[in-house]
Every structure is written in structure tokens, then in C-alpha cells.
Length: 246
Ligand SMILES: NC(=O)c1ccc[n+]([C@@H]2O[C@H](COP(=O)([O-])OP(=O)(O)OC[C@H]3O[C@@H](n4cnc5c(N)ncnc54)[C@H](OP(=O)(O)O)[C@@H]3O)[C@@H](O)[C@H]2O)c1
Image (tube, rainbow, N blue to C red; front, side, top):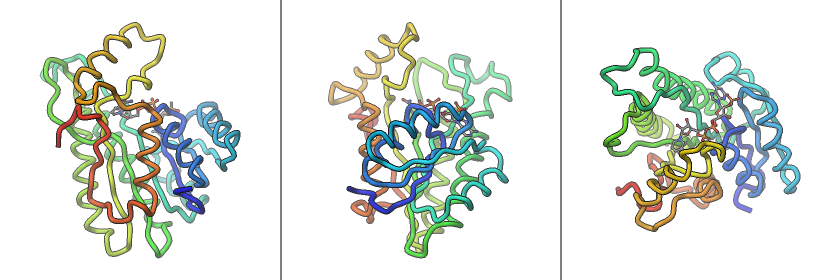
């Protein structure tokens, strides 16, 4: 198993992407600490991990709350791997020039603040041998023909945090990596009526004729978090099936 003996915290672990990554970490032998705001969602993922033979604990933590993040990190220390998928609060479909300030800045503040707090807390509790900070989102070219408000700005900020932090933490053996996709249709609510149309358009944008599944994202995250990827830092990993060309 790739992550045997590792302790991994997943912020947003009750959601689609966070849940998939947490399940993959659990399957690969990590002790997974799921953090998020809704207990029932976290427990459902933890139950899956345990049913598959893994180890998981849950905690309700608002990742925007510095004191809550610090207390939780101290309680689960030591931390080998920290994964954060939180970039919530974006408003889409409204042109930027017509958008309310609060709607524009919400995903930026959420992304930057939760990553700053959770990364800072994890680093304080990483072993002397180092650790891994992972994030999901990444940057990409501007989206044409559709307005995504502050979300892409948030992802660009995250990439710069990744670059800066990796230079500051390299000598402590801490790796910092982001993953980016061209969209994971499975994560769209099955009851949403535009789901098929979005899936078709996301698929058309790929080179491989298929989009990433949640399991695909979990598999790559587990590899990147493992010692097999010990040379990877200051990097972003493209899991877009060619939708994003580096
Ligand atoms: N899915 C994709 O294809 C895709 C592609 C590119 C980027 N992204 C980005 O990745 C993020 C996650 O996507 P997803 O599909 O997994 O979303 P999701 O299913 O809504 O999961 C997000 C999780 O984050 C948690 N969360 C939000 N704010 C939090 C906070 N302040 N403290 C603690 N937990 C918090 C939520 O918990 P609660 O429900 O309890 O609040 C939820 O479980 C999104 O922001 C999206 O912009 C997604």
C-alpha cells in the first residue's frame, strides 16, 4: 500500500472530491482524519473507509476558523499529509463587471484563507522527516463564453501560495503540490438537469475523449501524497485528460 503508516487530514472530506481522495488515502493504508462542516457527510465517507478495512476519524471543523483549525491539527498530530479541497462560495453566470463585491471576493477569501490556515497548522505538526501539502483546483486558461466570477482568481492565488510555500518548506522536507482537472462530471448532482450537457461539453474539451472520474482523482492524489512521488514539489499535476494543455 502506498500510504501505510501515514496520517492524512482531508479538509472538505465529506464532499465529492474530498471524499474520493479520502477513500483512496484510506485504501492505501493511511489513517484518514476527515474534517468539514457537516457531520453526516463526514461520517458517510468514514464508514466507507472503515468498511473497506481502513481507519478514519471525523471532526466538525470550519476551515475558515483559525482557532478551530489549530486545535484540530494539534489533536490529530503528527500530520504527514494535508489535503484541502475548499474553494466554496463562487457565483457563476454573472459577468464580473456586474457582480457584487461580496460575491466576487467570497471564493478568493475562502480559498486563500482556508489553505493558509490548514497548511500553516499542518506544517507545525509535521514530523522532522517532512510531509506533503496538497490542494485541489489549480489554474488554467480563462473560460470563454461563461462567467466564473472569482473562482479562477482564487485558483491562481492558490498556485502562487504553492510556489512560495514550496520554496520556504523545501529544506524541511515538506512538498507542496496542486492537482487540477478539467472538471469531474461525477461530482455534479445526478438530479441536476443540465448534468448531461455539462458532461458532454467537458468530455469534448479533453484529448482522450473521457473526463476524470472521482476514482481517477483519488488515485493520483494517493500517488502524489506517497513517497513514490518524493521528488515532486513546487508542481501542479494535470489530471484533465488533456482538457488543459501544459
Ligand atoms: N468537482 C469538480 O469537477 C471540480 C473541478 C475543479 C475545481 N473544483 C473545486 O473543488 C471544490 C470541491 O469540489 P467538490 O465537487 O468536492 O465540492 P463539494 O462536494 O461541495 O465538497 C466541498 C466540501 O468542502 C466542505 N467545506 C466547504 N467550506 C468549508 C469550510 N469553511 N470548512 C470546512 N469544510 C468546508 C463542504 O462541507 P459542508 O458541505 O459541510 O459545508 C463540502 O463537504 C469546489 O470548490 C470546486 O470549485 C471542483
